[in-house]
Length: 237
Image (cartoon, rainbow, N blue to C red; front, side, top):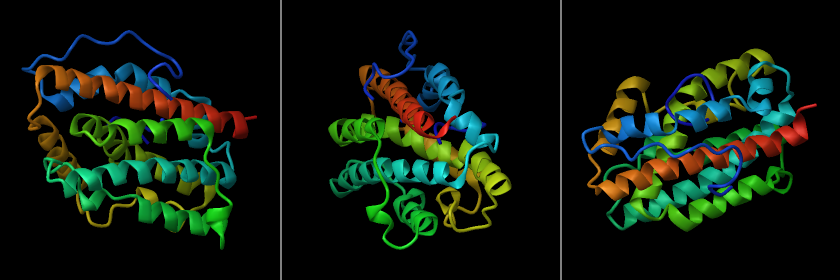
């Protein structure tokens, strides 16, 4: 899911519903707070997508959730590859955490959901391919990585936890299949999220770079909205 709001919740800047850009964040406002305020409209639009509402409401089947997991694999593979490059270069500013890595858990979930040979059975939807292309284009730079990491990981730690409970309730998962939302190396989510926000706030960015981070996070939300739209076109009747 996306961002650090509750409940739940990825393309070019022109994809999906657009809103007027908020004013550039003041240097006196922590970057994490500027991100939260600057992406509020996009976040709310993503949450209102038909696919999300039907999934949370228990009106979709396991196949729909499995399709979502397949899109997540493509997105997180690109995001985490970008983070690995930043860390290898020594320029990640402590924003790349092994505790947050999602790809292994998604692969385990897909093996449970699709069975043997799952890699030959999953598909990447057009909006997901656009999302991946955007990550590959920009996320090798720290400001853009910070925007996309904030959008994805804090969402997983917040609204994603709500979604996991809904999936367990409506689809009967008791473990395998939704381990994407488990963070076994993080024993207390709130303190970890506080540390993540502190590192965001401490990034050595210029005023223009801070504004670019917020704008890129808005792009990330619109990319996410487009993925939900593609999923909805397939699974929402």
